[in-house]
Every structure is written in structure tokens, then in C-alpha cells.
Image 1 (cartoon, rainbow, N blue to C red):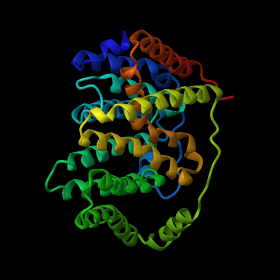
Image 2: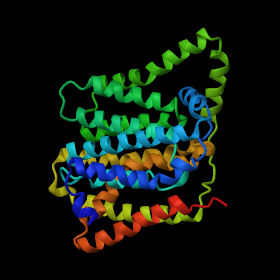
Image 3: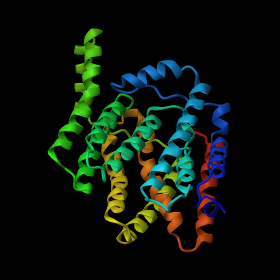
Length: 329
């Protein structure tokens, strides 16, 4: 029922997806989770936290609207570049479900902001594949990697997705490398000027040096329900990766390269966990755009659609149950 209905992409599908999101976030609207405190040198998230940290209900509404925007953008990205069945809205449904997979995620936090930046960044890099003059897209991708680190410092390592894209797209001209570097350092230049004018530059340099030099591996403390959902998601994702690796021979070189770029996002997200500090549980969200592609490939790739529907239904029920009966004790 779910998979068959969401194989198409019309206004009704998106309305249903929004309604499902409201159901998953229902308890959070009444009993909002805590907005996580800033960690490390994150000037933009520190500002956001000062505005919304004491307004938990408004923070939940803001987080929900942000996730809805990301849901639509990610689905459009996958459809436009033919990474999933064309004109399907299933990846949007999968994304909003996994973005709601733990009650602590159901508010505004630095990772759902970085997820939005990741979707835009991937879109710019994918558009650069077939564009003769792509320096503007490469510049903006480097720029977004830096801006993301102002909300969540580990996102600074997302810069690595640019050379990966150059290799996958076979487009590593020296001007692209230089442009990416300029785009990346531009936000830091403006930030340095601000700190200089406010007489904070020396102190902030020390903070950044200390953060860069500290490789902190925090254990992931998750509730047993979260572990169950995580393991189920990884099993389904591995299944989807099998379908992706088995199927790309039938696809064009462009689609294969773009698919692998999304998968590489997983590798970079895992490596950047070294700077995640106490937000390590939220750090998993960086995997969710790639996870959405893998899970969508799983459900669309299964030959026995009846079993795909059953597995999807129980996966959804598991997350829904966790949303309303989660107990962190």
C-alpha cells in the first residue's frame, strides 16, 4: 500500500507525507525535547540557540518546518538526477520517517540545519557534472561546507566531498580546486573580520586551535529502542547498497557517479565523528540523506512487493512506537 502509493509524485502524496510527519512529531509538539546546547566554535548555532533555546515549542515547530523543506528538496534531488524511480515520492516518505526516528531529533538542532546544507551542496555538485562552466557551483559547495561548520564544527570535514566529486565526475581541473578552496575560506574570512572588530579574534583562534587538535571519541549513548531502529536501518541500508551496486551497470555513467557521490557522504560523515563531542547521537543524522537513498533502493528493488510493503510497514510502526513510548531512563 505505502510503496505502491508513493511510487508516483503528486500533490496528494506530499500532503500525506506531511500528515505522517505530523503524526510522528505529535508528542513533541506537546512535550518538546530539549534543544541541544552549542558545542565548540559554532557562532551561528550559538546565536540560534540564544533565540530558540528557551522557546522549546517554537523550536519544535521550526525544526518540523525545516525537515519538511528538506524532505521535498531531497526527493526533488533524487528524482531530477534519476537516482531513484523517476517521479517517485517514496524517498521523501523514507526521509521524513528516519528524520523522526528518535524523539530527541524532534526539535531544531545543528544537524538538521547541516542536513539542509548537505542537500543543497549535493545538488550543486550534481548540477556541475554536465555544466561547461561550473566554478560558481563549486564555489558555493565549498562555501556551504564552511557555513555548516558555523552550526556544527565537524561539518568542516564535508569539504572532502568536493575532491571526491572531482574524481567521480572526472573534472578535477586546477581552477575547480582553487575555486573550492576560495569558497571554503570566504566565510572564515568574514568571521575573522567580525571577531577582529569585536576584539575577540585572539581568543577565538585559541578556541579553534584547541578544537582542531582534540580528537574526541564520545561513546554513543542510545536507548535500546534507538539501537533496534539503528540496526534495522543498517540492515535495510546494506540491502539497498546491494541493489545499487548490482544495478548501476544498466545506468549511465553520470547516474552511477552521482549515486556513488551520495554513498561517499556516508564515509565522510563517519570520519567526521571525531569532532562530534557530546552531540555524537545527533551526528548520525548526517547519514540520513544517503540512508534515504539506500532504503528507497531496498523497497523499490525488492521483487516481492508484498514483502516490501510488510517490512516497510513494520519499520514505520517501530519508529512510530518509539516516538510516543520512548523512555530515556
